[in-house]
Image (tube, rainbow, N blue to C red):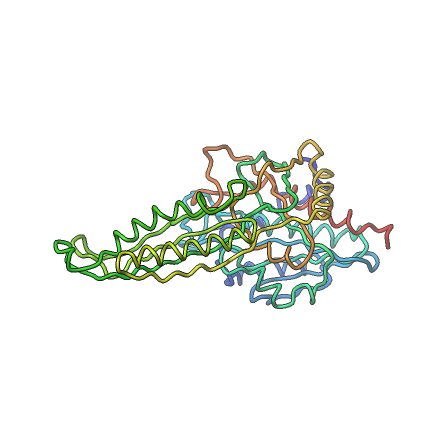
Length: 392
């Protein structure tokens, strides 16, 4: 994995930073210790300005080059997940029920490594804004940052990010123009019937039966309402109702997710989920309350920014280790809000796990520390290529 020599020099230090962050995970908008660590290190590196409290716990570092010029943003996410860790690592989470199961500890460390290099070398003209974002997993921290004026306070011409991807070859970069990750909605349905004794169902109106009918019917939403060449997903992941084996409950709640790329597909999914839920409940003489909450838009890579990101990735990993993804993923990513506000691109960095190894959001997931200098070199190379000294 070719990397910048200076960044390779402090790979061991980066590994220590990452494992410390892993041991002390924090959930959305509660990344207080993480933010303190990030801000302290940025100051130690000699970053020109370090601004804390952005969108609550976000941190932005401003690094100025040898002369004025254009500006770019480099972003990493800092939050962990509400998952009980099962890795057994020496540096496993010390916070019960919380762990870095998505690699945000690694993303934060890679951007810290790039910040250290850029602050030391200043081999660019213009400004690099290093953006450490809270609440990617829950809460839409990117949206909050943008709404609070992130890019007005810290102007950028383009913004970039990367995400480790365990199923792809280690140290290889993957890209797509246009849709890379899906838009996300949270589905909440509450069916209200009439409770009764389980031995006397005729005296009630069973919401469990209605829920079972609805789950089956929802499988037709994409299959029969979305054009086959387009993509959509409707999944019910949780059903709750009742407290006893012999009692028909009054209500049953369903919780799920919807995913899509094209906005009109999202409109179709919302309309059909709502119609099916309310219609089926009404047919049984019950009622259904539906909430279809749009969380994140689709992650859309701008063409020119993607080309620039690919050029930087090839400089770090070699052209043969930078590939176009054959298709986007239905996973969601709130970096989409930044890409809606400014041109930019988001790439995947392969982590080299086998098919049997734990993937993202698994209680045994662990970030591959070999990637740290690769990701840091990518960020640093982007800055030097997009803000060349001879262009000042």
